[in-house]
Length: 190
Length: 415
Image (cartoon, rainbow over all chains, first blue to last red; front, side):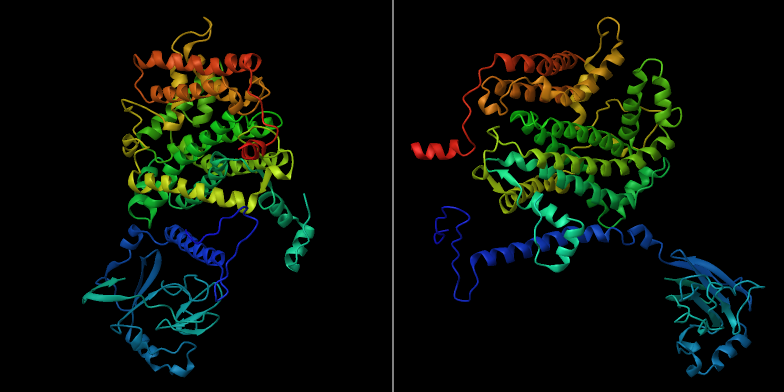
């Protein structure tokens, strides 16, 4: 570069400050540092991203469930993305219980109609929103808690017949996964 | 080590109790580096970078890999096809092994050319040989993990080397395998050791650097530093120089990773391991070829009593063990080949000899390669056991400069 002053030794710093007080050295430090950061970031990101779900894991992300064999009052548990999904064929009584609750009484207010597609079928991820245990209430003799829904044995959270938190440490209702009815008796979760 | 009075109260508080900051300042900031060091002195740092790169990519790969004979091959294919950037991690790791060996071989050749192994750096050199041995073990076991044909048969051939030992040989091999052939127990322990050894290497590298900083770096003139006028601070002079060298090296590394990722491997390793079919042509990775050639060159009884198999194994391990004795085999007091007019040529002859051994190691075990390999093997041992000890007595070295500065400044003054 033509304007560079010949440097007899690196320790004698010939710093030409421009009008705004920025030296060439500061400019080079900043731009080189910025390029270095971009370079490091572009290497580190794929490394971190490699720990995210892989393509084959994502490919297993949806399942079809046949509901034909589940009688009124029965419940089944299926596995979706490695988690239990509760599917309950609710009785008229249970639906009425879920509908009759005042929203003001709920820690996480949500009407039953927002939690189901067809009122007969309640589909939820069976994982307590407190610290991730699987609540009881799927089997015949299980403790269903005070609200006739689900009871988490780990820390005593109690869910109602819509899977909404009513009592105990859990902060939120049981999560409703994305699902759709393919036919009257088949759903696709995910 | 010089204690620094730090301005930052937190740093000062820590440093007074655990002097990590003073240590880093002394060893990587103020450390006096001979000012005539050339770019060959960057390869130690490059090798260190490669060790870290191998550990980082290796840990991430280990999160996806399954060390089981039924699942290992497919888990590697899953890394290639399904894991986000898995192909990048694996190609960085597989080619990184080659890059690590390139850096270390250049680093060692530099030490041999400039006599860096001579007093007071003997232990520094021996620690380096230990690192190389550990690297070889680690690389070998890593190559077994994908459980392809080359993995399986490489493991079979190398572990069978120990069967050459009389009486205990067979028992040792069974013990190594954890069974009666290379199988699941072998794969499991190789994975465990492949994960462990890099951290052992890291520990020995720390000792290597401590030993280096205790005695100071050698330099192309091979003469001692006389005073501060002969050195520059490590930072910024060596850090910026090494950063540039590393950048150039990374461009070279990237070429293999992104444009020719399988060139340094073998196509046969993309066939799942089959204990019933041996590939027609088994070759180790390129960085083992010289030693593999030495192994195969011993096709005759040694001293009429040692069987060829055992002789080959002894020669192969001996060729590496010999390096540890180099400080005492080289009898010349002059370090740098610059001032050793005859040694300079023998150094390059050794390089050519090793290239020849590499070529033979990659060729099929038939004539004329066997004969070439035997000549090269004989020369390798001749170099270390005969030429080097004698040369120190015969050779008349060139006059050494009085100081590191003299060849530069002296020339300027006389001009």
